[in-house]
Length: 479
Image (cartoon, rainbow, N blue to C red):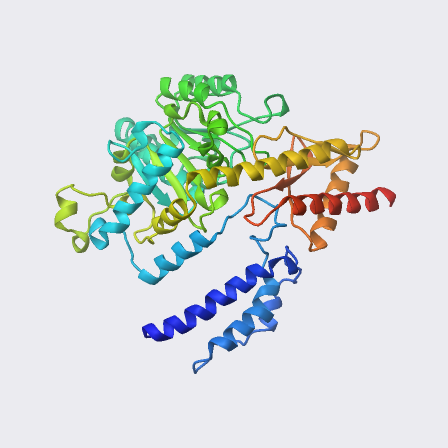
């Protein structure tokens, strides 16, 4: 494809995407297709001869879009947001156009150095401790997801311990977290070879708004030490998946430090809010952490994937993850003059992801980004108030950020029927195609989650969402 073809096709693609956003509210938010629908619409084999862009885009309209769940819709309130933006899209386009594979500094110096710079910019916006900046022994790196971030730091922590305890001590290593921690931690344990019986999943409940109690952690660590085991990894949360709970980082970090446990803080969702001074308090204690992670692709207008990880000791990562085959050797790396991000992650190859984060920060600016987050939190506060005013509903956990957790109240104290009714309500709401919410379970209660954070969401969308939920609930109560 020459540059003129790119210009022509690129214009058409941008027009197509711009039209998609212009009409996004006309689509059912949650795709209503049945499993296997696309197999009936597309041929069994690839075409032998070229087709036109028009033919392909027509198929996207008629065959692909009906099977898309529209994450950027203003009526998408499920899971957590996955932000897209003009700046993020342009950065992604530029990255794709340049087409580099920046696994080491020499493969594209700008890719490595820009990543270091923008991670430092974000660290300063979050007021992270200096040891997370790239000028010292620490630094930041862009991973694909929070799951990858947890895995790489667990491997670093594991190898650091095994170097002193001996490689045969793997079966003694113990991991700690609350039962509200993302399942990515469990997967990381499976991959890192941590024995399932050595994963301490500590119960959190409504008495702490589902935050981990430090005394529970201390008790578990003490028991394991007495049993001759080796506590080595703790995952704390700032904004859990189920209810956006916040663990007490300072207290947990104190226990971790006194027992030489690697302390990882997962702030995948809520970390973005902490650029606002009034929400920075929720990561107080992060100075005790060995690693900290937030997803810019969730709530920071940066297209997926862009998960930001900072570590206190970059050498722990590189000692665990580096490889140095002859065909990758070069003068800059051999002289230890540069960072090679291939040694900070699982795969070798990596895209120029810092471009989109850089463009988001430059084209919007920190104050715009702060106000963007504040607006979503205000909308969530308004929704929380609407829920509280309806006698058929109750708020289950106090809202901190932009997630509202609620349910229809039980009738005659029958929790089983209440759970069934809330699942019915979830199905009715999502089947309408007008909006998409998700659910979780807290202390055995089925809870509905409404996470406000899509870039196009406005006050009118939140009000209409609540109206739909009330209408569906009224129908169920009359049954």
